[in-house]
Length: 489
Ligand code: FRU
Image (tube, rainbow, N blue to C red; front, side):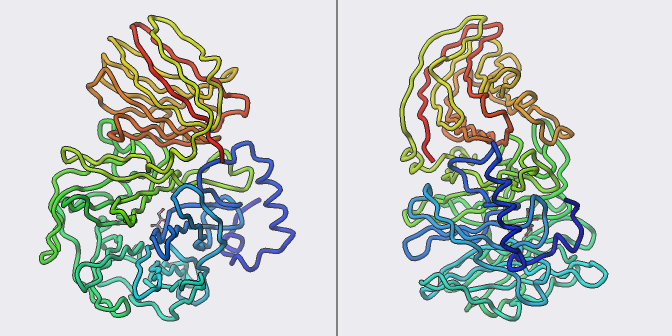
């Protein structure tokens, strides 16, 4: 299929039954469909949007282009859940209707007011010369799940001094005032975020640029999100255009956070360090919401902009991460799989033992969909796990105590993905004993190290029969204590 402007900018309602059947058939033959991650029925998924708890349920939307595995006319696809684990597909929530959103409903967020869920989004339009025109608008969802769109945008365009790359409103309430933060690009092509204020969610006044100590930090800030965790202010961003630095920022674009203090009078976010959120290959545009019990829960897009994936040939692309609870320890962000995940645990297998300069296949540990927990101690050298092993395939995850690195290597994971950006990721770790929680799904792996201190999130595209798990200790002694639970979908 060749993609042109005409085929990329089609509304979902234009899809014929025959087209849908063809898409469903292609998707049903895909060997990489996920078992416990949110994925599109067909077409392309990107950012999580409108993540909120409303009327006893978590509501989550994602950016969706229905017609194939490319970025085109975006809709918001709606899923809901009572427990963050079992998600029910509700279909399209918000679709383009008006001229100012003729080229898609871009990312945004949700907030509950007076029994209604307000869903703020960026209305994306291309004019006759294909110049972008961005405005901010909203739709309201009521208790019955009906959506009503606002006809006119509440913020019709960007302020002076900024380009039309002005998107991804995140709204929150402080006292009686609502605030909105929007990702933006200055006319000098540097990234920043802009702040607005409102008393009623309808009338918004521009407050200025969010001041930070990171004035020159990428060319465009996407998907900003501000919230508090135990008295700390946190600002999450997906800045585009960061150059690789040491082990950081090796993907086409990367996401991270500032932890510090947000001065609401001066609109100054004080923090001296940007912490990359993920050490793996495929993680972008995360969004958080607060659960009724106070936990701040994050979901990310397990994919990247400007990147094609092997499952594209089956007419679907990308999925979301599992939900993670954010915590702060020693001024560092931690991501912990939400406690509800244990509900997925089925049959348990355990293994405990030592290796010394050898490799061992764990014969009773086969699988493609599971949670693998445990500890690993490496005396002095390289030791770790080989996951999804097959005749020629393996995904390596190991500790290298001599170099003090934790490494994820997808060089031989299966069908190659985004190899121009390298096939190995690593991060510094001075421990020689680490704890692990590995969430393996048909075509992804999420590895949480040391209770969420480091996370490696990656798509992998192995053959169906690559289900082995091996342990190895190259030039050292190492000990492992592992529990594996099969997951049901
Ligand atoms: C991030 C992003 C957002 C935008 C959306 C469009 O991946 O580029 O900035 O709103 O995707 O799909």
